Image 1: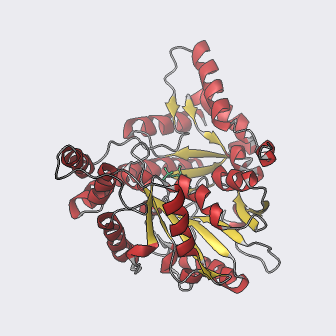
Image 2 (image 1 turned 90 degrees about the vertical axis):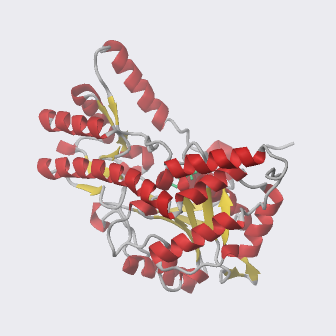
Image 3 (image 1 turned 60 degrees about the horizontal axis):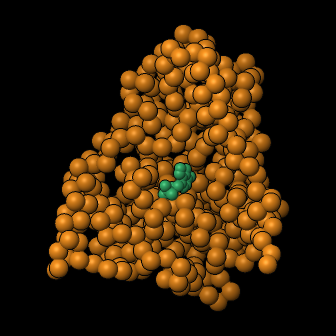
Length: 393
Ligand code: PLP
């Protein structure tokens, strides 16, 4: 028996535990401090009414002889795939076949599981800073990883260089953690690069619903040529508050062929072998979010967060602090003032303003000197946090 020794190479995820420990210690010594948490990337608004009603109705159906359903299709029910297909058409003018859409319990699982269809000798390219899942899932398989520096010089949006060696390229736009988002022209350069090299882009569009800028595509498939080089991961988590309900989807276009194999067919085979689908009530709830009424309701929640982003960014504008994000994203990535390190600024914010952010250094070397704030708190807390920051700094 041998274990997978690659697990020894995975960095300890001490970021959020270290944050929690510093906050706990501070609170113990300052029991009256009212700490406002703006670090965690989880939503706070409740599920929309349409989702709740659809889920209840589905549960009632399941309790009847006629309405009971056992195993569903592993790749998701047609009613949800059709709703997603129509959503792409409406929001991105992208035409998909429902067989190219695969429903899952969230983007994180699919981002990890997709690696089953790729050989371990592929070279992986990720940005630095990065959503850690891309790095850890590939480290587990022993793949070589190249880091593309994302920094103030390139607007936190690295572009391919002629000498870039990469078979699988992770792009997350709008980005977690930096909030930066690629324009269509920039993505076209990546798509051309991937097609030329026979590389595959794994495009994470978990935050597509936050895009406001018309130049920023909500799907990579809005970019010409993407159907022959990209796989897209998306989720109801941030779009519709499903972080605890769990539903996401992956789009693998039929035109994506490598070494004579259809990646869509390979993913179908993988899913039908290792996955037994998402529960019927959850898929009903997800589909309800994409109905006319559901869309109105989820937009209401998204606008709530977008308003918080404006409160944060207008404060930083006022203070003259450089930042990215906040415009097409729930994340604001701010340069630590006075040349402070990420953790020094974290401590200063915690102790002087009782506000908690996430130190940028936790997302990679290039994150040093930055801090991530999220717009997922309440209006009241966000405004109060910004008032304190203005007062202290
Ligand atoms: N992708 C990115 C960039 C994320 O930030 C997250 C969650 O925070 C996910 C994927 C995971 O999404 P899900 O909840 O659908 O697994």
